[in-house]
Length: 506
Image (cartoon, rainbow, N blue to C red; front, side):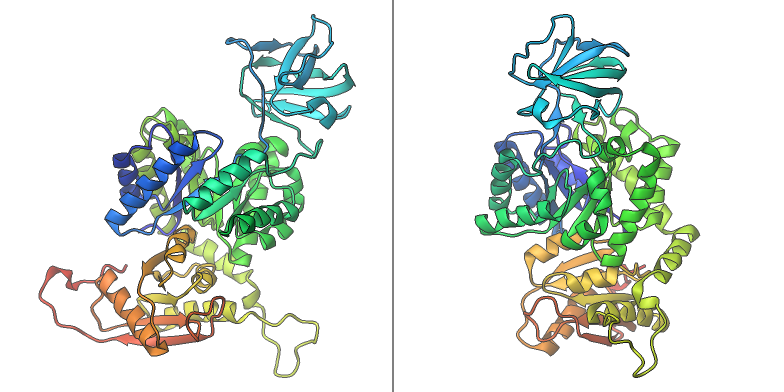
């Protein structure tokens, strides 16, 4: 089975219950609800359908709410658009305004208040993913007068970017706050914050969650140049990262995008936080039955880099063959994960992890040196022990998911089972690389927790001994954020004459 997770965006092509079920069967682990489109009623209906189909399959499926953020778009224009000629001057202004500019100038409304006041001479303006490029020359009569550097036809509702921090716009809009309230009330598992610039944006979102009485993990979408500069701080503050290559590829030089992707994935691996690689993964399959060779290589290379998850956007939201797209991505993922290249990359990655540094002799640790995190040490040890003794799997008993995530960051070749009594943790861990969440009842005794978890894994995986499992946990139970136990447990041989006697573990 694949270890890399798949995030699929729901839309007109995929919102029927039958299609949602087929997407789960094809390999989807997380469904993304894009709040840039659709009414609350549509999203509520999709949430209900996802939960129902997941329940039928007894499957851990998470829901990711993607807030649209302050995405600037062109306003209403003629159906055939407005042509901007290279070298000409165009007037850009807020939709609804009536700037006193000459009628001879091309006029482009932008759906954001006080657009002219937010930009300054010298600022770059990119429209439609940078296909049309302008530079602000002056501000006059309520409009930004811009020189057209690269012309083209501008249509309604096309994206407008101001790269390089040309203007400051709050990352959370009034619409986002209303959408967030709705998502929290309907039990979304993750919330993605668009156009993050710094840690303050993440803290502001957490404050809004607190006001609504429910906190969920935050995925920070890296798509602004300011976010790239604050990468380390954002990774530390957020619960996960999305490499949003669409707007990012417009905000920074296109040749920088692959390097930023690798840096972000590496930073998330080191921090033990999930990272999603997104945008145009299999874009051509919106129309075509097979992907391009370049797209297949792009998916595989993101997996080689160590991404936790791959995201499909228009491919599943509006594409002709949403189920076939997921099946294709799953096949590429499985093939990449079973390759020698993947295992070589894993070894290179592990050598860069902090736990791999040479240990200091007894009594020689410098006072200023950081004390190794116990959960990280146990996560690393669990992987090493499992390989050394030929364990058939690793079992992480966890309340909040920390134990499982700390193990997953080392990308163990053995199956990783995360056993939890917490239903939210059960769903959220479906985003973490290689993790197979299992929901179990709460145990009152520590020994019952370990024995019960191993028994549940054996039952779910149809494992018949003799075999060994490496088990980690945090004791006492019911306490989150503690990982302090590691144990090797033997699964005794059991006689069985039915077809379920063989293990489903690889």
